[in-house]
Length: 289
Ligand SMILES: Nc1ncnc2c1ncn2[C@@H]1O[C@H](COP(=O)(O)OP(=O)(O)OP(=O)(O)O)[C@@H](O)[C@H]1O
Image (cartoon, rainbow, N blue to C red; front, top):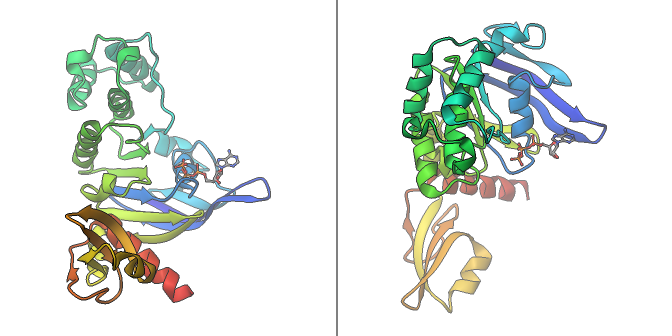
């Protein structure tokens, strides 16, 4: 559905925000992961036709979106990172406003979308009184008005509390059927349960495009749990990568990334996706050193 070929974006002479990204995406939920400044928003902005690549191409159903942006715009829903609601409008009025802009004339669709994002009971409240999570949910409802085939959502869970995070995550997971959902975050656990693929960016480059299962499988035998005395801990910490440390009953309970048994009594653990990615990164760093 969407193909990126050597997509590069420069800002001035010095900043290469996106650097030669080649990527092919079909239906599903793609977690676009990277630290702050990795280039995620810049890449999403280009997919949303709000900026043009300095070089390279983005093809939507085979056509270059720089040449025919309307083809993708009609089938795109976009929730930018800095999405703002109009405080004086109620949720319903906000949706009616965007429906008119997007040429959507079906009032029942607005109702259905407000139900989908669980704001139907609050539809008449001014958006100014909404929490961050409610605003984001309204943002998603707005992005879905045109029943898009591609939904691009930039850092949707930033600033949300755990309950709203969960609710938002489930909502995006449900939307993944039959659509391409691209979801950026620097918090791996936010996409762990819903992403069918991960695209990992570092300093503008795409460093991996894989399924979570592949990443988890590769990390087997690299993540361990161990319980050591407080006295033994400092020396161990020098030798291995400690992912998590907790003091309990006078001992240190650890989760460790290490390519082999890190210490006597350690047990192999089932890695989380975040731990698997950390283990992979440490292994790559050690190989390069
Ligand atoms: N308009 C711009 N002018 C100059 N530099 C920019 C511009 N937009 C982004 N950059 C730079 O490009 C790089 C990538 O930024 P981008 O916002 O795409 O990263 P990101 O992965 O989305 O990070 P974040 O999660 O913080 O938004 C950064 O170094 C950023 O400072």
